[in-house]
Length: 146
Image 1 (cartoon, rainbow, N blue to C red):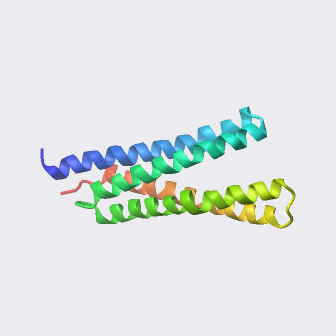
Image 2: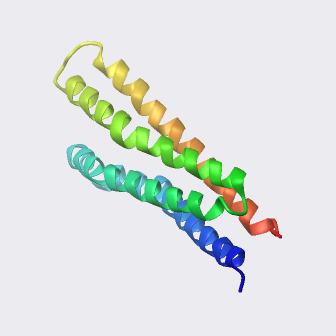
């Protein structure tokens, strides 16, 4: 088996794991958390889970980018962009969202709007990341590399 075939297989597994993880969290876990748990408990739980969710995305996207660079540089670039935007979300955006949520709950005026804006940004970024992951996965599944 050639090295490129091994990299193709590894990349496909990594991207599929990433897509499945993101889909499961977005469409199963997140809704269930807020349906089944009290709002205060749900908020605490989400704060505990999101750093790990972002870390998983960062690792899988980074490894995916590394395996794709040898035979699919555009896909590698998309995966690197996903990893970089996830680092932004995890290290910068998420702490600000939490800060403004706390300030809003404490009654500080003007903070609810900022929280809503930041939270919406994180949702849009996550949606774009998921679309990019799905595009890479579909490309890996349906395009034969030489």
